[in-house]
Length: 118
Image (tube, rainbow, N blue to C red; front, side, top):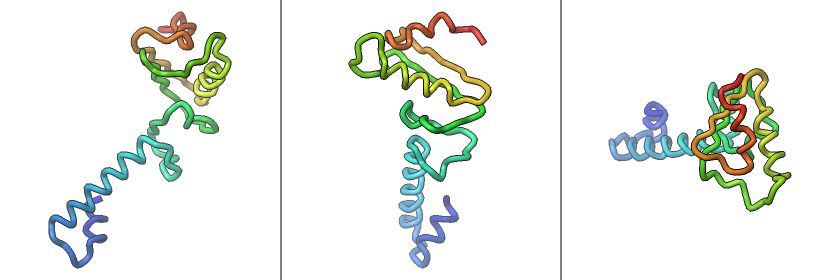
């Protein structure tokens, strides 16, 4: 990124211009890593929200479900939430790891007995 910043500022090689461009590049890259970026496909590790996983596939996935995660106001039997969870859980070709952090909401509660199993 530094080399790119040096090339971008061209003749204005003052340190403030270089650092400003570098700061903007880092902010852009950080945002890209946490969002659904199309040129990030193929990266060794990708972070994405539940809705971003649809249509994607990976060798392994780690699904983090935390206490306090909001899955909407849907009442049981959670038809929409269950479909979303199903899509998320079948993204892996080989391995899916589910991390349940805290007391799970009702949508996730049925997964608790599976904890510690392979």
